[in-house]
Amino acid sequence: MNQPGTSTSLFTRLRFVLVETSHPGNIGAVARAMKTMGFSQLVLVNPRFPDARQQEEAIAFASGALDVLGAARIVGSIDEALDGCNFAAALSARLREYSPPVLTPRALAAQLAAGDSLQAALVFGSERYGLPNEIIERCNALINIPSNPDYSSLNLAQAAQVLAYEARLASVGDSVPSTPIGFQGQAASLTQIDGMYTHLEQALVAIDFLDPANPKKLMPRLRRLFSRTQLETEEVNILRGIARQVLLKLGR
Ligand code: SAH
Figure 1 (cartoon, protein in one colour):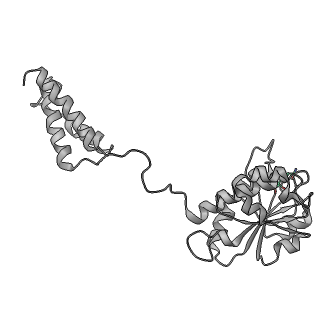
Figure 2 (figure 1 turned 45 degrees about the vertical axis):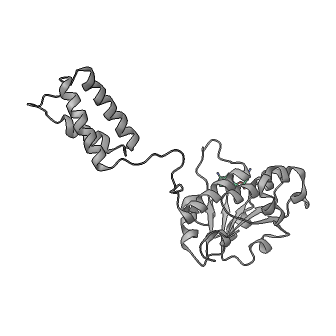
């Protein structure tokens, strides 16, 4: 599933490789994690169950991402999984003595998003053993999700979610949709707002809160307060209504 944009979009350049995964449920959950962030290329290297894609748990955890799960490729070696890639990043909860450069998911995602010609793989280890050193040493980077040093091992699908999320943000940014959500009234015009200040000022003078001979900075401060609020016509009318009522009660 391509995102709007070009064929070099990270969504078509990034694959998720799961090595020797034990639990079909985790495979399904990774498919879901990927699809929620717009990714679809899933490769399984020697899963414990060759029919993992059809297993009940995988299907249940994939939920609406059955397309990603069903299209997952099953291969017999890491070489096959990385075929066509020119960049591979190994995911590990543990840092090693000998390893490629260590990056955070965010730093990696920035590199991947910027490198249009990168055909990249994220390589995840098995639930019990993680990734073997031979695979880590073949990768261009070792990715460590910063976590609690006393308990740093995330669930496989949750680790995949973190990476998919960072990759998405690095690609499309983190702004929320620009169309306003929920109720939004009509923005008040400057004339309406000016009328409101005049009205408020009269009321404040009438109740002796504002001394016209010595106004200090009251009105400028109130203007500053309201200028931060993006007043709507309805709200201006409420404030004017309050001022009107004050004046009415005082017989002015
Ligand atoms: N028991 C294994 C961890 C398995 S968790 C071990 O000690 O290595 C399954 C996979 O999720 C890991 O192989 C790794 O690819 C990924 N993962 C889990 N926690 C991670 C972390 N903090 N940083 C990077 N990857 C992590």
